[in-house]
Image 1 (cartoon, rainbow, N blue to C red):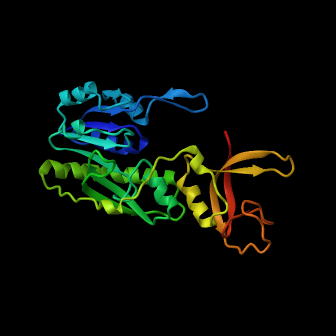
Image 2 (cartoon, rainbow, N blue to C red; image 1 turned 90 degrees about the vertical axis):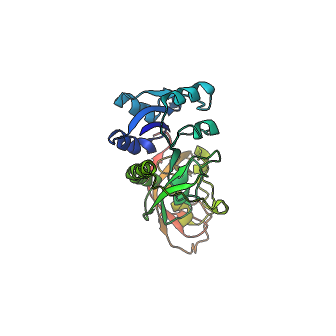
Length: 292
């Protein structure tokens, strides 16, 4: 099976490793251009570009995969299958309809729940107890294609988004190979999504990490887990001694059940140095000062 891969994020690396170790032919990769990252804001290639360089696999970086030149390039390769994972671009119908077998997408949620760029984060933030991998056919509407296969897993009580990301990435690789095998032998069955049950998982930005301590401590604990390691859940700490404020990222916290008898305002520290919340309090276990 000749495969063209469209992807940018680290989530797809386990699947790429599985593909090159299989009997399929990974002929070409399309990924996003380098982006500024780190303190020096230096242009940094995507994880997929770095992987392709390491494996000496041909790849192309583009801001728009739907240009005629890119479409012609992919068409000339005559792929049987297109695999899309964490690509970060909308894919048009000309590419979707190009391969004779299918164009499929690996997504880190149990669709139709959590369509969008940050399904892992939002599942934890919203207190879901399970999530999984969905492999779907590509559709012009984001994450709305027919379901080829799904696999479920429990979300652990103190699991961060980073930990769940890595676990789901490992789950996805064998599931992708099984799905491709079923596509090859014609045994694959498809199921339409119930679009009325679709929920969004929009891309997160740095400001989304700011903690509102007027909310219940448990919801803030989930937010801390769901935003670690990026963008990170943050708060402003005002030192009484220096009268200076510093932004800190909270990496780990524990809920402390309390009725707040002292009537302290949300966001202040009680006598045990726990942060008072709208309900209960948060014991801050691990922080990272801004910029560290």
